[in-house]
Amino acid sequence: PRATEVMDYTPAQDSATSVAFTDVDPALGSIAGTLVIGRAADESTISLYNVYFSIGSTKVSLIGEEPSLDAVTRPTCQGTSCDVISITSVAGGAWMMSRGSEGYGNDEQATITIQGPASLYFTFFSTEPGYDYLNVMGTIHSGTELPPRVDVPAGSHTIMWASDFSVTASGWTCVMEPSNAGTIDVELDSMPIPDGATHFLVLTAGADGQEMETGITFEITDFAPPSSVPTAVAFRDVDLGVGVIGGEILISRASDESGVASYT
Image (cartoon, rainbow, N blue to C red; front, side, top):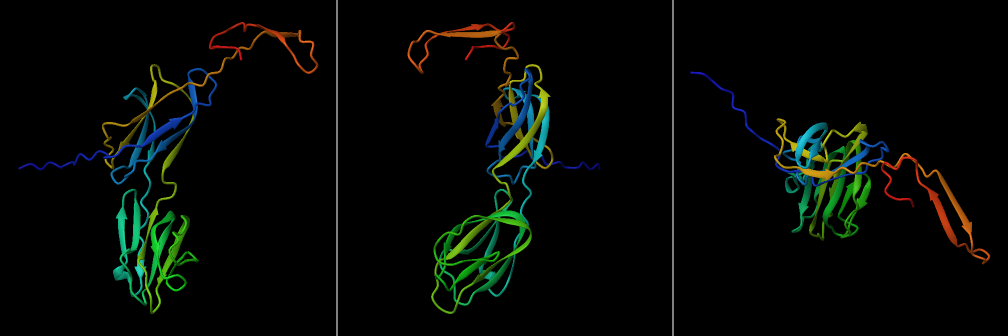
């Protein structure tokens, strides 16, 4: 018998949500600027965003590749109440930490250790005002007002949960996601536009490099202002009013009007 290694075909399952670009290179046929890619809503199957010059959705040449976000390190919990605090993985390499929304008990104590860099935000918050609280990296939150989103610096930090001996409320839920979630900024140095290329094409790829069959495109607009200027301009005021002018402006055309659409 002969053995054959099984290779599981696992292309990315979600695409970028948007792509935008403004050319700042004044040379005709060349581009430069920042390509802004909207990250996929779920990056769990994505390792790379591959950027191509294309003709519509047909590849012409690869410009480069950008990695997906690294998953946030799983938070850990210590304390007598860790068994009632859920820590679950959610889309995009994020973690959800929750004491639920159906009510918590008296005398709960727990310390959750989190690792940055990351971004932390709350989706639900209800504790006994002034007595039951979350201490998020040194800032105490209590009551029903949703705490603001905070940036978690690099390194280890803590979220401390405590309830007192009487009166409770509903609970709380927060999510910690990778920093800079949302978009990828790709800096493109001056480069020629390949012959025939009309668009940028962004395709997502899985861990094995297999690309999703469909992607997202953005039409290239080549910023190429005219290199020639009018040879002369003249004006004679024929309005007799003080502070008011009127008359005809005479513009002598540029010696080379290539790329000139109008005189403004």
